[in-house]
Image (tube, rainbow over the protein chains, first blue to last red):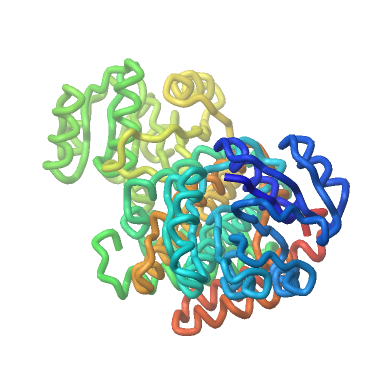
Length: 260
Length: 260
């Protein structure tokens, strides 16, 4: 398909690259800032513009990867009647693009995307169409760049966005604080990498609730006390430790889980 | 080396299997419960006993994988003077085995080990020797079953045990609650697996603080508000969400991190 990429940030960069790699033709990059637009266009062998009025009108699909706020105002500067226009945001309604085109929807990659991290990771695409007749077109396009494609409504997509925040943002913050703790205590954080790898790998084959380990699920109060002594001068980590420990103890106690 | 495995739980199972696979000779399994001891012994082609008095006295190294509490009482039932005896616990002092043998220490796998999860994962070994002359022996043995071997004192090992709790126990609890949330909301948790995989894979090559994404680090209050509405009927998740959001906002605000 012929594609126009609107935006030049992390999501635009990764989506455009995946789309180009899948054999589609990117006609143009449209973005507010010239430098990143020119760079992406050079990589994809297409033109670019920073002028909304010069947006190419001939594409089969327009991929809009702008900030949530910019999406809300897009209809004020861009009209693409009869053209298929999708945004890539997890927490924004599909209707936000109705002011740009009736034929609009969502193509949301459920992944943490950073343009500097190669290779670009695999991701599922959650799709929504404001007009039912556009759904098969979006789905067919989505399947060329993702193995998992699922139709979702706005609420389900938002809920998955919340779940993604838990498993990505919060896990990464735990890694961040653990690495900082290691630096402060002169320990080698790389010793924890096999454990991080294994923890994530297990949920591919086991329910996470069935592979929980550690002092909290064992009700091992002696170790919990020793850990909290260690964290005595690490206020944020102590708060996290206490909340997780209370919740894990309650969750597995209540649940009558055999692992508990 | 000739090895006796003391214990028959998760750690004993995984350690013994790695030791056998590395070409050492397991002489015997010593454990309180007969059934798992017999099963492990059959797998390793060795004998077993449930009687401390019948512990084989001819091994070069005794691997003690018992509960923290059982370690404390081991000297009451087992004496192995002149023999090298190591425990595998993260949060227990190396001195706990001095009542069993002066030649004692620690061989701690920094990993979450479950006997039912194959293949057994890679792990670093943190080693301690109560007598300096035993350290090279423990280190040489450790290197036959682990790529990363590091000498640590009790306090550093305990600190790494705390860090392991953060990155494994707490991350896995986040996965657990996210999967339960998906079940309750009739969403497909498997859609989150590529994200979980990517989040863990990134810390192999990037500092976790440099790859933080999400509404909290962006200061995206509109999305945070929408997420908290979704979590309104999920009390535990709301508590976690609020604490992480406050901490991430403060951490990146204070830190003047470019990603913030």
